[in-house]
Length: 371
Image (cartoon, rainbow, N blue to C red; front, side, top):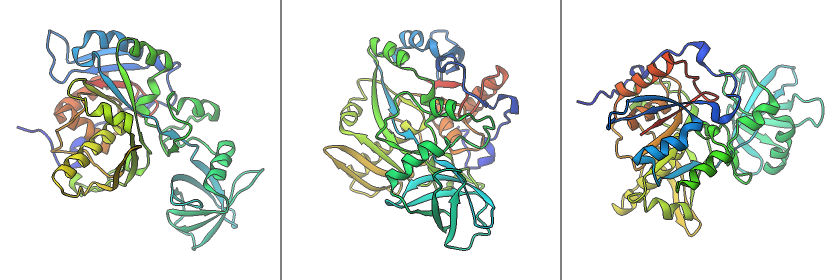
Protein backbone atom coordinates (compact mmCIF):
# COMPACT_ATOMS: atom_id res chain seq x y z
CA UNK A 1 0.00 0.00 0.00
CA UNK A 2 1.28 3.45 -0.91
CA UNK A 3 2.44 5.63 1.98
CA UNK A 4 2.03 8.85 -0.01
CA UNK A 5 -0.26 11.67 1.05
CA UNK A 6 -1.78 14.74 -0.53
CA UNK A 7 -1.36 16.72 2.72
CA UNK A 8 1.70 18.96 2.73
CA UNK A 9 1.97 18.55 6.52
CA UNK A 10 2.86 14.89 5.98
CA UNK A 11 6.12 16.01 4.37
CA UNK A 12 7.32 17.87 7.44
CA UNK A 13 10.49 17.20 9.44
CA UNK A 14 12.70 19.27 11.73
CA UNK A 15 16.19 20.42 10.80
CA UNK A 16 18.25 21.91 13.67
CA UNK A 17 19.46 25.42 12.89
CA UNK A 18 23.03 24.22 13.38
CA UNK A 19 22.67 21.98 10.31
CA UNK A 20 21.51 24.73 7.94
CA UNK A 21 24.68 25.39 5.94
CA UNK A 22 25.68 29.04 6.08
CA UNK A 23 28.82 28.55 3.99
CA UNK A 24 29.88 26.03 1.34
CA UNK A 25 32.30 23.25 2.22
CA UNK A 26 35.98 24.34 2.00
CA UNK A 27 36.31 22.44 -1.29
CA UNK A 28 33.39 21.38 -3.47
CA UNK A 29 34.35 17.69 -3.35
CA UNK A 30 34.75 17.73 0.45
CA UNK A 31 30.98 17.77 0.98
CA UNK A 32 29.39 14.68 2.48
CA UNK A 33 27.51 12.30 0.19
CA UNK A 34 24.65 10.11 1.40
CA UNK A 35 24.02 7.09 -0.82
CA UNK A 36 20.39 5.97 -0.62
CA UNK A 37 19.72 2.53 -2.12
CA UNK A 38 16.02 2.24 -2.77
CA UNK A 39 16.22 -1.54 -3.14
CA UNK A 40 19.52 -2.63 -1.58
CA UNK A 41 21.05 -5.92 -2.73
CA UNK A 42 24.36 -7.79 -2.59
CA UNK A 43 24.48 -7.19 1.17
CA UNK A 44 24.93 -3.43 0.69
CA UNK A 45 23.43 -1.01 3.23
CA UNK A 46 20.39 1.11 2.46
CA UNK A 47 22.26 4.21 3.63
CA UNK A 48 25.99 4.72 3.09
CA UNK A 49 28.01 7.75 4.21
CA UNK A 50 30.66 8.91 1.75
CA UNK A 51 32.19 12.12 0.44
CA UNK A 52 31.59 13.64 -2.99
CA UNK A 53 35.21 12.85 -3.88
CA UNK A 54 34.32 9.14 -3.45
CA UNK A 55 31.94 9.29 -6.41
CA UNK A 56 34.28 7.65 -8.97
CA UNK A 57 34.72 4.63 -6.67
CA UNK A 58 30.95 4.43 -6.14
CA UNK A 59 30.33 4.57 -9.90
CA UNK A 60 32.82 1.76 -10.46
CA UNK A 61 31.06 -0.47 -7.91
CA UNK A 62 27.39 0.28 -8.63
CA UNK A 63 26.07 -1.42 -11.81
CA UNK A 64 23.33 1.19 -12.20
CA UNK A 65 25.94 3.99 -12.39
CA UNK A 66 28.36 2.27 -14.75
CA UNK A 67 28.43 3.65 -18.32
CA UNK A 68 25.67 6.06 -17.33
CA UNK A 69 24.72 9.40 -18.84
CA UNK A 70 24.48 12.31 -16.42
CA UNK A 71 22.02 15.09 -17.19
CA UNK A 72 23.03 18.52 -15.88
CA UNK A 73 21.45 21.97 -15.86
CA UNK A 74 23.90 24.50 -17.32
CA UNK A 75 21.76 27.59 -16.68
CA UNK A 76 23.82 30.34 -15.05
CA UNK A 77 22.80 32.29 -11.97
CA UNK A 78 22.93 36.06 -12.39
CA UNK A 79 23.39 38.46 -9.43
CA UNK A 80 19.66 39.11 -9.27
CA UNK A 81 19.48 40.81 -5.85
CA UNK A 82 19.90 44.54 -5.34
CA UNK A 83 18.41 47.28 -3.16
CA UNK A 84 16.44 50.39 -4.05
CA UNK A 85 14.88 53.32 -2.24
CA UNK A 86 11.70 55.30 -2.64
CA UNK A 87 11.90 59.10 -2.63
CA UNK A 88 10.69 58.89 0.99
CA UNK A 89 13.90 57.03 1.84
CA UNK A 90 12.50 53.56 2.61
CA UNK A 91 14.81 50.77 1.43
CA UNK A 92 13.54 47.70 -0.43
CA UNK A 93 15.20 44.42 -1.37
CA UNK A 94 14.59 43.36 -4.97
CA UNK A 95 15.23 39.96 -6.55
CA UNK A 96 14.76 39.82 -10.31
CA UNK A 97 13.15 36.62 -11.57
CA UNK A 98 12.68 36.77 -15.32
CA UNK A 99 12.84 39.27 -18.17
CA UNK A 100 9.44 39.95 -19.74
CA UNK A 101 10.93 42.01 -22.57
CA UNK A 102 13.96 44.24 -23.04
CA UNK A 103 12.92 46.63 -20.25
CA UNK A 104 10.39 44.90 -17.98
CA UNK A 105 11.07 42.17 -15.42
CA UNK A 106 9.15 39.96 -13.05
CA UNK A 107 10.55 40.42 -9.57
CA UNK A 108 10.16 39.85 -5.86
CA UNK A 109 9.94 43.27 -4.18
CA UNK A 110 10.12 43.26 -0.39
CA UNK A 111 7.97 45.74 1.50
CA UNK A 112 5.95 46.95 -1.47
CA UNK A 113 2.53 46.91 0.27
CA UNK A 114 2.53 50.72 0.65
CA UNK A 115 3.55 51.46 -2.96
CA UNK A 116 1.42 53.66 -5.20
CA UNK A 117 1.79 52.60 -8.80
CA UNK A 118 3.75 53.49 -10.79
CA UNK A 119 6.26 53.79 -7.93
CA UNK A 120 9.58 55.45 -8.75
CA UNK A 121 12.66 53.81 -7.20
CA UNK A 122 16.39 54.48 -7.28
CA UNK A 123 19.06 51.89 -6.66
CA UNK A 124 20.81 52.10 -3.32
CA UNK A 125 24.29 52.60 -4.78
CA UNK A 126 26.67 55.47 -4.22
CA UNK A 127 27.91 55.36 -7.82
CA UNK A 128 26.20 54.63 -11.12
CA UNK A 129 22.71 54.82 -9.61
CA UNK A 130 19.84 53.24 -11.50
CA UNK A 131 16.26 54.53 -11.80
CA UNK A 132 13.31 52.21 -12.26
CA UNK A 133 9.54 52.06 -11.96
CA UNK A 134 7.48 49.51 -10.09
CA UNK A 135 4.36 49.06 -12.24
CA UNK A 136 2.69 46.32 -10.15
CA UNK A 137 3.54 44.29 -7.03
CA UNK A 138 5.79 42.01 -9.09
CA UNK A 139 6.63 44.02 -12.23
CA UNK A 140 9.55 46.44 -12.70
CA UNK A 141 10.39 48.64 -15.66
CA UNK A 142 13.97 49.80 -16.23
CA UNK A 143 15.29 52.64 -18.37
CA UNK A 144 18.15 50.48 -19.66
CA UNK A 145 18.00 47.30 -21.75
CA UNK A 146 18.28 43.74 -20.46
CA UNK A 147 21.92 43.37 -21.45
CA UNK A 148 22.85 46.74 -19.93
CA UNK A 149 21.05 45.80 -16.73
CA UNK A 150 22.88 42.46 -16.51
CA UNK A 151 26.18 44.31 -16.86
CA UNK A 152 25.11 46.73 -14.10
CA UNK A 153 24.19 43.82 -11.84
CA UNK A 154 27.62 42.24 -12.28
CA UNK A 155 29.03 45.35 -10.57
CA UNK A 156 26.30 46.21 -8.08
CA UNK A 157 24.14 43.13 -7.61
CA UNK A 158 24.39 40.22 -5.19
CA UNK A 159 23.94 36.52 -5.80
CA UNK A 160 20.34 35.63 -4.84
CA UNK A 161 21.13 33.35 -1.91
CA UNK A 162 18.07 32.08 -0.02
CA UNK A 163 17.05 34.10 3.06
CA UNK A 164 18.09 31.34 5.50
CA UNK A 165 21.74 31.96 4.53
CA UNK A 166 22.79 34.89 6.72
CA UNK A 167 26.55 34.77 6.08
CA UNK A 168 27.09 36.38 2.70
CA UNK A 169 30.34 37.20 0.93
CA UNK A 170 30.15 38.75 -2.52
CA UNK A 171 33.46 37.36 -3.79
CA UNK A 172 32.85 33.87 -2.38
CA UNK A 173 29.21 33.68 -3.47
CA UNK A 174 29.99 34.77 -7.04
CA UNK A 175 32.23 31.70 -7.22
CA UNK A 176 30.60 29.06 -5.02
CA UNK A 177 26.92 29.80 -5.76
CA UNK A 178 27.62 28.85 -9.38
CA UNK A 179 28.35 25.49 -10.96
CA UNK A 180 31.62 24.96 -12.81
CA UNK A 181 29.67 24.17 -16.00
CA UNK A 182 27.30 27.17 -15.90
CA UNK A 183 27.14 28.63 -19.42
CA UNK A 184 27.99 32.32 -19.70
CA UNK A 185 25.41 32.58 -22.52
CA UNK A 186 22.61 31.17 -20.35
CA UNK A 187 22.56 33.81 -17.61
CA UNK A 188 18.90 33.63 -16.54
CA UNK A 189 18.53 31.71 -13.26
CA UNK A 190 17.40 33.49 -10.09
CA UNK A 191 18.71 30.64 -7.92
CA UNK A 192 21.39 28.01 -8.35
CA UNK A 193 20.70 24.43 -9.44
CA UNK A 194 22.45 23.52 -6.20
CA UNK A 195 23.05 19.83 -6.88
CA UNK A 196 25.67 20.89 -9.42
CA UNK A 197 27.63 22.94 -6.88
CA UNK A 198 29.53 19.86 -5.64
CA UNK A 199 31.18 19.04 -8.95
CA UNK A 200 34.62 20.18 -10.12
CA UNK A 201 36.25 19.95 -13.52
CA UNK A 202 38.62 17.34 -12.09
CA UNK A 203 35.74 15.18 -10.87
CA UNK A 204 33.98 15.57 -14.22
CA UNK A 205 37.12 14.42 -16.05
CA UNK A 206 37.53 11.43 -13.72
CA UNK A 207 33.99 10.30 -14.45
CA UNK A 208 34.37 10.80 -18.19
CA UNK A 209 37.47 8.57 -18.15
CA UNK A 210 35.19 5.86 -16.68
CA UNK A 211 32.93 6.07 -19.75
CA UNK A 212 30.33 8.23 -18.02
CA UNK A 213 28.97 11.03 -20.19
CA UNK A 214 27.48 14.45 -19.41
CA UNK A 215 24.58 15.99 -21.32
CA UNK A 216 23.22 19.50 -21.01
CA UNK A 217 19.76 20.89 -20.38
CA UNK A 218 18.73 24.41 -19.46
CA UNK A 219 16.07 25.20 -16.88
CA UNK A 220 16.05 28.85 -15.84
CA UNK A 221 15.44 28.55 -12.11
CA UNK A 222 12.66 30.75 -10.75
CA UNK A 223 9.61 30.63 -8.52
CA UNK A 224 8.58 27.24 -9.85
CA UNK A 225 11.59 25.75 -8.06
CA UNK A 226 11.72 27.64 -4.78
CA UNK A 227 8.31 29.12 -3.99
CA UNK A 228 6.86 27.60 -0.78
CA UNK A 229 3.66 25.56 -0.77
CA UNK A 230 1.04 27.79 0.84
CA UNK A 231 -1.97 25.48 0.68
CA UNK A 232 -2.85 22.44 2.77
CA UNK A 233 -2.95 19.94 -0.09
CA UNK A 234 -0.41 19.26 -2.85
CA UNK A 235 -3.19 18.95 -5.41
CA UNK A 236 -4.07 22.61 -4.78
CA UNK A 237 -0.55 23.94 -5.41
CA UNK A 238 0.28 25.25 -8.88
CA UNK A 239 3.90 25.69 -9.91
CA UNK A 240 5.01 28.84 -11.69
CA UNK A 241 6.25 28.34 -15.22
CA UNK A 242 9.96 27.99 -15.88
CA UNK A 243 11.65 27.97 -19.28
CA UNK A 244 13.29 24.72 -20.32
CA UNK A 245 15.49 24.18 -23.36
CA UNK A 246 17.03 20.82 -24.27
CA UNK A 247 19.57 20.97 -27.13
CA UNK A 248 19.16 18.52 -30.01
CA UNK A 249 22.41 16.75 -29.09
CA UNK A 250 21.01 15.96 -25.63
CA UNK A 251 17.70 14.83 -27.16
CA UNK A 252 19.56 12.28 -29.27
CA UNK A 253 21.04 10.82 -26.09
CA UNK A 254 17.73 10.87 -24.22
CA UNK A 255 16.24 8.63 -26.87
CA UNK A 256 18.89 6.04 -26.00
CA UNK A 257 18.08 6.02 -22.29
CA UNK A 258 17.03 2.36 -22.39
CA UNK A 259 20.58 1.31 -23.23
CA UNK A 260 22.30 3.73 -20.86
CA UNK A 261 21.01 4.58 -17.41
CA UNK A 262 20.32 8.26 -16.89
CA UNK A 263 21.36 10.09 -13.74
CA UNK A 264 19.73 13.48 -13.14
CA UNK A 265 22.02 15.98 -11.45
CA UNK A 266 19.43 17.87 -9.45
CA UNK A 267 15.70 18.31 -9.42
CA UNK A 268 15.84 20.89 -12.23
CA UNK A 269 17.58 18.41 -14.54
CA UNK A 270 15.04 15.76 -13.57
CA UNK A 271 12.07 18.06 -14.25
CA UNK A 272 13.60 19.06 -17.58
CA UNK A 273 13.85 15.53 -18.95
CA UNK A 274 10.50 14.47 -17.50
CA UNK A 275 8.89 17.54 -19.09
CA UNK A 276 10.27 16.48 -22.45
CA UNK A 277 9.00 12.91 -22.12
CA UNK A 278 5.62 14.24 -20.94
CA UNK A 279 5.42 16.39 -24.08
CA UNK A 280 6.47 13.47 -26.29
CA UNK A 281 3.76 11.27 -24.76
CA UNK A 282 1.13 13.99 -25.24
CA UNK A 283 2.22 14.43 -28.87
CA UNK A 284 1.95 10.71 -29.54
CA UNK A 285 -1.53 10.64 -28.01
CA UNK A 286 -2.43 13.88 -29.82
CA UNK A 287 -3.53 15.61 -26.63
CA UNK A 288 -2.39 18.86 -25.03
CA UNK A 289 -0.41 18.74 -21.80
CA UNK A 290 -1.75 21.05 -19.08
CA UNK A 291 1.71 21.22 -17.43
CA UNK A 292 3.47 22.56 -20.52
CA UNK A 293 2.94 25.70 -22.57
CA UNK A 294 4.56 27.14 -25.69
CA UNK A 295 6.25 23.82 -26.44
CA UNK A 296 7.99 23.29 -29.76
CA UNK A 297 10.65 21.12 -31.32
CA UNK A 298 13.12 22.58 -33.82
CA UNK A 299 16.44 21.42 -35.31
CA UNK A 300 18.08 23.31 -32.41
CA UNK A 301 16.21 21.37 -29.73
CA UNK A 302 13.11 21.29 -27.54
CA UNK A 303 11.77 24.35 -25.74
CA UNK A 304 8.84 24.69 -23.37
CA UNK A 305 7.51 26.60 -20.41
CA UNK A 306 6.95 23.94 -17.80
CA UNK A 307 5.02 23.90 -14.56
CA UNK A 308 5.37 20.17 -14.06
CA UNK A 309 4.89 19.43 -10.35
CA UNK A 310 6.25 15.97 -9.58
CA UNK A 311 3.98 14.80 -6.78
CA UNK A 312 2.06 11.63 -5.91
CA UNK A 313 1.05 9.55 -7.80
CA UNK A 314 3.89 10.39 -10.26
CA UNK A 315 6.15 7.33 -10.50
CA UNK A 316 7.11 6.76 -14.15
CA UNK A 317 10.62 8.25 -14.02
CA UNK A 318 12.96 7.95 -16.98
CA UNK A 319 16.02 8.77 -14.87
CA UNK A 320 17.32 5.78 -12.91
CA UNK A 321 19.24 7.78 -10.29
CA UNK A 322 18.98 11.24 -8.76
CA UNK A 323 21.82 13.36 -7.35
CA UNK A 324 20.46 16.15 -5.18
CA UNK A 325 20.91 18.28 -2.07
CA UNK A 326 18.86 18.02 1.12
CA UNK A 327 15.71 20.09 0.72
CA UNK A 328 13.42 22.16 2.88
CA UNK A 329 10.59 20.41 4.71
CA UNK A 330 7.12 20.74 3.16
CA UNK A 331 8.67 21.87 -0.13
CA UNK A 332 7.88 20.79 -3.67
CA UNK A 333 11.46 19.54 -3.97
CA UNK A 334 11.20 17.21 -0.97
CA UNK A 335 7.90 15.91 -2.38
CA UNK A 336 9.74 15.18 -5.64
CA UNK A 337 12.44 13.28 -3.73
CA UNK A 338 9.75 11.22 -1.98
CA UNK A 339 8.24 10.30 -5.35
CA UNK A 340 11.63 9.34 -6.76
CA UNK A 341 12.37 7.27 -3.66
CA UNK A 342 9.10 5.45 -4.25
CA UNK A 343 8.27 5.90 -0.59
CA UNK A 344 7.62 8.88 1.67
CA UNK A 345 8.72 6.73 4.62
CA UNK A 346 12.09 5.92 3.00
CA UNK A 347 12.73 9.60 2.20
CA UNK A 348 11.95 10.66 5.77
CA UNK A 349 14.17 7.87 7.12
CA UNK A 350 17.02 9.02 4.89
CA UNK A 351 16.64 12.58 6.12
CA UNK A 352 16.54 11.40 9.75
CA UNK A 353 19.76 9.49 9.07
CA UNK A 354 21.32 12.63 7.56
CA UNK A 355 20.30 14.73 10.57
CA UNK A 356 21.66 12.15 13.01
CA UNK A 357 24.98 12.05 11.11
CA UNK A 358 25.04 15.88 11.00
CA UNK A 359 24.85 16.36 7.27
CA UNK A 360 24.61 20.02 6.25
CA UNK A 361 21.28 20.98 4.70
CA UNK A 362 19.93 23.14 1.88
CA UNK A 363 21.69 25.22 -0.80
CA UNK A 364 25.25 25.26 0.54
CA UNK A 365 24.84 21.85 2.17
CA UNK A 366 25.82 18.26 1.43
CA UNK A 367 24.68 15.91 -1.33
CA UNK A 368 22.73 12.69 -1.70
CA UNK A 369 22.41 10.17 -4.51
CA UNK A 370 19.30 8.00 -4.81
CA UNK A 371 19.94 4.82 -6.74
